[in-house]
Structure formats: structure tokens, C-alpha cells
Image 1 (tube, one colour):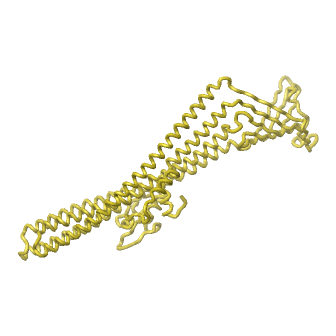
Image 2 (cartoon, rainbow, N blue to C red; image 1 turned 135 degrees about the vertical axis):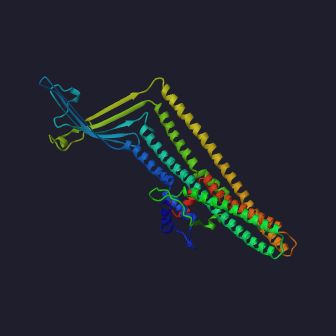
Image 3 (tube, rainbow, N blue to C red; image 1 turned 120 degrees about the vertical axis):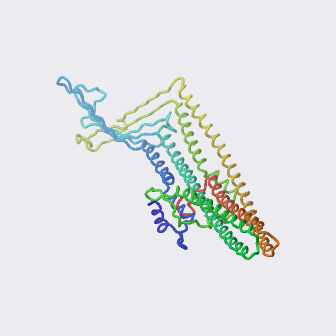
Amino acid sequence: MRTLLLHIAVAVALPVHAQDGTQVLTRKALLQLVADNHPTARQAQLRNALGEAVVRSARGAFDPQAVAGYSEKRYGGKDYYDLLDAGLRVPTWFGTEFFAGYSESGGDLLNPQNTLPVEGQLRVGATVQVGQGLFMDRRRAELRKAQAYQDMAEAERQRLLNEVFHAALSDHVQWSAKYQELLISQSALQQAQIRLVAVRGNFKGGDVPAIDTLEALLQVQDRMMRLQDAELGYRVAALQLSNHLWDDALRPLELLESVIPDTLDMEPPQRPVALDSLLAMAESVHPDLLERAGRLRQLEVERRLRAELIKPRLDLSGALLTGGGAVSGVGDSNPTWNSGDRQLGLAFSMPLLLRRERGELAVAQLGFNDAELALDRQRLLIRNGVERRASELATVQQQVELGAAMVRNYQRLLAGENGRFGMGESSLFLVNQREVALLDSQLKQVALQAKRRIAYFTLDRDAGVLWRTVADQLSTAP
């Protein structure tokens, strides 16, 4: 059932090419499957939603609030008091809180300070923090931290995508390499079988000794064993690649035997690696650095908040008062605001020793310094890592070029040995030795090509830009 699902996906949804009953799964088609359906890729997309939810929650501290309170007391047949207070509070980013409200009061034993006009009372005013909280308070700090967390969540998304794409691309390259090794082993077996038939015919004609037939048979058996190893390696690589294949319902898929890789996917990128620009990009957009920078911003906000809490708290409040006829329907329904009818307040508080505040500020400062040092260290590690990967890539590229030259030379050597064998100046043993050396060099060359291709992906991953490269290939928004 799982292979059938992948067959449908490959035949309908993916841009593949059919040839001789086989279907070609390209690297781009694989990446599209991974980006759309892989559980880790979907987990990565959840990070953005999580960051937005955290910011939305922090913004809730600035939402207007409707408040209301009512209390009454009756005892021994007496109506002690009835108090109603309702209104709207609007906090602002700058720490000032505006409010508007309506109050009513009544009763036989009402506290004189709660005595209000018969029609009730309207008030409009504000509370201002002119000491502690003027430049930073807990609401603003939580929102700043949430915004930094949103950036950290985006960085985590990029890191997850880098890892999942690198794993999928590496396994796809290994699958492609094992397929090429399989083709080489099949061709080598066919050549050995053809030679065995020819040697047996020459032996019957009396041109070669019987031991040459045994030599040819041993070569066939050796090539058969090599082919079995290649078939096993190809099947294992296909199963490994299947770990990255899922359908849109998150059901795991398996590769069909008729699905083969595109040999062009083993070729390196056309453009050379620009190390300087890659290093600059790594230092500015690497997910690990972005995540640590977000954490550093959170600690900076915490440090600013702790420094603010050392200041004395001084809150000023003021309100204009007028009759509430517009609400109660009693008395004048057109309130007149008189600057003389007002309510003013002042609140002051300050710890005398500030031990807790100074201790918390020291902890915040030390945490910030620690995170700053860790960021600098991580930046250096990433830079050195990218330079190391670039050096490894340059070395592998030289090995690939050298390996290609060795394959050509082994081919010339085999061709010369075959010519000597045809003139009777060589032996079947030497010809077989040349063939084995050529076969080994071809297999080694495939391994080097795979190593080179993976080195490009690893370089982009360590620079933190692999997910961007994939997004460009798929022509989707990063």
C-alpha cells in the first residue's frame, strides 16, 4: 500500500520522466515532497505560528479593559450603602493609562467621601508613571521579549529546515551513487561473461590453455559478488531515502523498484563557491546566530527592566469630574466639564536598601554578558566551520579531477593490454588485473563525486543558507 501511494505520487504529482518502464525521481521532486509532507518540515512551519501566538498574547497586556464593581449593605432594616463603579481603562505603550468611568452611590450610612450627586458622576482621566516605569515596565518588557522570541522561533524554523533538507539531499546523493555503482557492476559482469564465453571457445579451438577458462570463470564469480553487493547497497540506500518520503496524510512511503535517480543530480553547481560572500551571509543570517541574538535581546530587555525597578515609584493620577446625567438619565444630560471639578492623586514608594533590586540587576547583567560572549564564540565557530568545509570541498574537487584522470588512464592501460593480448604478447591474468583496477577506479570515482556533491550541501548547511537555496530551487517563499 505504501509503495502504491508513492507510485501515485510520482506518476501524478511529481515532475518525473518515464523511460523503458522506469520513472526518474529528480532532486527537485524529492525536495518538494520533503518540503510539503515531511513531519520535521511541518514542525518547522509551526514555529512561525507559535511565535505569532506568543506576540499576540503579550500584546494582550495593552488591550482596553472594561471594569465594573457593585457592592451594597443592608442590616437591621437599614440601607447602609449602595456603590456602583464602572468604566473603561486603556493602557498605552508609554506607561500612561487612560480611564473613563461612571459612579453611583446611595444609602443611609454612606461614607461621606463616597457621597456623589443624585445623577451619579462621570470621570475622565489618566495615571502617569513619572518614576519607575517611565521608560520600561513589565508590559513593555514582556512584549519586547515576545517579539525577540518570535525571531528565535523563525531561526529555529530555519535550523530545522536546514537539517531535514541536508539529510534528505545527502541520502538522495547516496542513492544516486549506489545506482551508478550498480550500473558499473552490471556492465563489468556482462564483460566478464562475454570474455568467459570467448575463452571457452578459444579453449575448444586449442588456442588457450584450460587454466584461462578457470581464470575467466573466477572473474565472473568475482563480478557476480560485486554486483550482489551493489544491489544490496542500492536497496539499502533506497530504504534510507524512503525515510524522508511521506504523503500529505503523513503516511510513510517507500520507493518502487521502477523509480531510479537522475544521474545529472550528481553534478556540482554551475557557479563556483564565493567564500567571502558566503561567510558574510553566514555571519548575518545563520539560524544559530539569529537564535542567540534573539536570546541576547531578551536579556537586554530584562536588564533594562531591572535597572528601571531600582528607581523610586512615583505615580501621578488626575481626573475631571462632572454629573452623570448622561448615563443615569437624571438631571442634566449634557455634562459640563469644569477644570475646578477634579480628582488628583500621588503615590510614592521606594525600598530603602534595594538589595533585591540590585541583586536582580546584577544577575541580569551577568546573564547578558554571558550570552554576548557565547554569541561571539558561536560566530567564530561558524566562520571557522564554513572555512573548513570550503577547504574540504576544494580538496574533494581536486580528488574528483584526479580520479577522473586516473579512470581515463586505466582505460588506456586496459585498451593497450587488450591490444597486446590480441597479438599474443599478454595474458588473460594481466587483462583481468587491468579490468579490476579500472572497475575499482570507477567505483571510487563515483564515491568521490557523491562526496563532492554532499560537500556542497554541507557547506550551505553550515553557512545556514541551505533552506534558502532549496526555496530558490522550488521557487517558493523562504
